[in-house]
Every structure is written in C-alpha cells, then in structure tokens.
Image 1 (cartoon, rainbow, N blue to C red):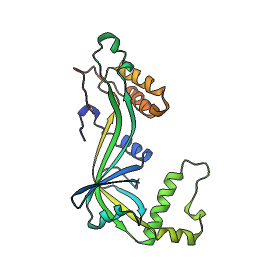
Image 2 (image 1 turned 180 degrees about the horizontal axis):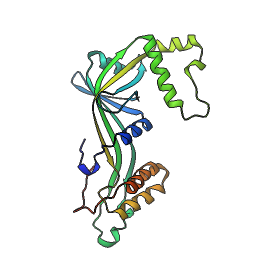
Image 3 (image 1 turned 180 degrees about the vertical axis):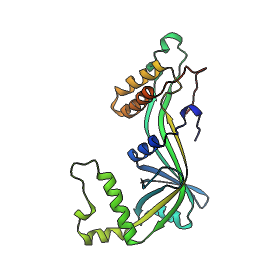
Image 4 (image 1 turned 45 degrees about the vertical axis):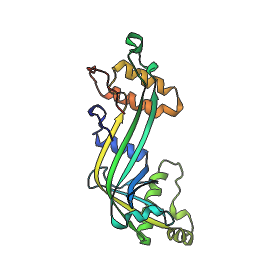
Length: 223
C-alpha cells in the first residue's frame, strides 16, 4: 500500500475502532502461485497489533479455509470511509484554480499467520463470540442459544474455525490532511450532504477538529 507520511495512521485506538466498525475483511493469499481473495468478517479478540488475534469462521464448502493448512502468512484488508472528492469542494479553488480531484478512504492492512480448526467446541466458541459482537448494537440481541441445540450442532458441522495471529499492521487514513484547513472544512461539509459519503465527511471533520495541520509546501497528490 502506498503510504505517504501525511496519510499514515498510527493511533492504535483509531485503528482498532475502525476495524471493529468494518469487520468484513478481504482475505488475500497466494495459492498454488495464483492470487486468492475472499471476503469474511473477522473479529479481533485483543489488540490490532503484532501478537494480536483475529477469529472468523467459514463454510466447509468454501475452499478458502484450505489456505490455512500450511499456516501461511495472509493479508486482511479492512476498508471504508470512501468518497470521491471534487475540486469544487475546496474554497481555495476560487483563488488559484490549481486543484484536482482525489479520493478519500481508510484502509487497514493486517498480516498474520492463518490456521484452522474442525474442533466442535472451538467452532461453537467462535460462532458465539462473533454473534455477541455483531448483535451487541441491537435492542434485543439474538444469541446462538436461541436456536435449538441439535440445529446448532448440525450447522457447526458445516463450518471451519479460522484464527489469524497478527504479524504486522499498516494503516492509512486519507482524509484531506494535505489540504488547507478551509479546504478540509469544505470537504467535510460537502461530503456530509450526501448519505453515501457521510462517514468520510465525519472522518475529515474529526481530524480537522483534533489536529492542527500546517499549510503544505505544495499540493500533494496521493492515493
């Protein structure tokens, strides 16, 4: 991932919060010399850092779990807060017109050693932990125990538990930090007007409120 210093994210709390809010990861690995990609929700059990642990489960029919047979290093990509940024959102456009379009986004790359298990007790534990995490925001959370035990046992037979031991974490938060404060405010306001880009707008606004960026020496174009 191309990572200019201005967009490098090092705040552990921000990274962990983003991953928790965007659990659907793109799993990338190399299988028999060819790239392999899949999309699975992963849950971090402790820390989004070296030594941390992520868990997931997938269908026995999904060949992705077989990637873990040799305990390879794989890549998980968590992404979101995406938005096209029009030059028209920059107030500075009126002064110089020296502005170009760009794209804002957040991406967290987690590398780690992937392993799997067919143990029934571990599969049940993973399913229960993932369910509790994803149901937590509901007024009346569904629990695995709400379903008949024989049915759950049957469903577990068709699953494989996945565990990822984190070896590295790289995070990028591209939120118009390379623009003047007034341009950042213009981006935040402009994106907030569109439902699809409100998350990206909130990201720009929160960074503008917490940071005090200096005027850049020159316009940086990075994606």
